Image (cartoon, rainbow, N blue to C red):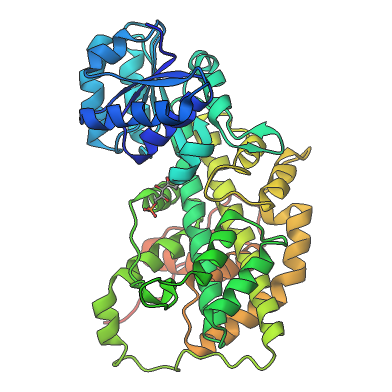
Length: 478
Ligand code: 6PG
């Protein structure tokens, strides 16, 4: 029992994490139901690991994996979220002893993690639900890690997690998020923000393309934006994607890709959870809906000849001015998307008593993960202030930036709507912003309607809050 950690599930993510751990000097006992996957990871580690003391040792059975580990054992599961996690736990748990730590590094739903934490705690075992972000490359070279679970489990896994995590400003991109399902919850919100960020960039791309910029021109625009306040991994890869040619045809790859988006569910989970907590995440909602609508390709093709409207072309007479306005619209909407995501985490953290450190979360997202961005420094600053703001939009840097860009944001959306270019996430974000800045909304009429048909009562502007009134409305005939 000389191994530092067991790893079960050697798909791309598991394989790369095993190599990352070995590269940092850890001995990994690796198991996969397909024995070839385990030996391939072992061979890959040996092939490139000469000179380092870390290795990957293939285990042929779960028992063999457990036997390589000293108590308390640390075992990382990298299997598909859902039933496969429960199936592995069924086989593994009888082989473990109290005090052992099982880590689930998949994109599990946080409610499943809470259930599994309770089940393992009843057997004296620790369960760590850990968000892991950064895709294949992140797993190999340094992901962002969002572990939940007990402080004891965190203390035991901390050296390994800090060693393999990405680094931003010299700090490892990992923090103990909170108990139970907190880690997977925060990863879920990361993905909701990821969806919004991606959709907003896609809308900016549409706004530039319909105004006549070709792919190479757009690649240059995104590359330029990546040197400014929008600097982020997603902007950087967008520049690279737009420049990429297909070797076979010479065409831009992006033009060859069918416009039907896939999704594996984490964005939808974020919406369901936010709806249940009555938190508005409309930019994420628009992003999920945009993926859904994109997937209805055949129906859209049919409807495109039936629904009347403008031709989807934007006449931008001053190209540079238009690019600058789209930049500002993207910046503004991005602020809203993050404001909504942080609002959701603040609310859930409060309701669940997780004690989430939002500044630490913003800091750990600065490296390794898909939404890594310079902008997160500003969020970390805003969240570390003496008095928390009611909404990120109200923190000084964000408030001032919104003041500078909101006119361009409106111009861009007005032009898009006149031209018939769908901009669902940018416009949902603007509606959210404008609702926040409205001292009076139309909900007075809504309350009257509720009182009319259901005697639901209302409060009055001219009476103290908390008193409820009802009007005897006239009856509707027929
Ligand atoms: C990450 C990503 C990743 C996620 C994919 C797929 O942080 O590395 O969030 O965990 O699984 O991005 O998401 P969709 O298939 O739903 O787009």
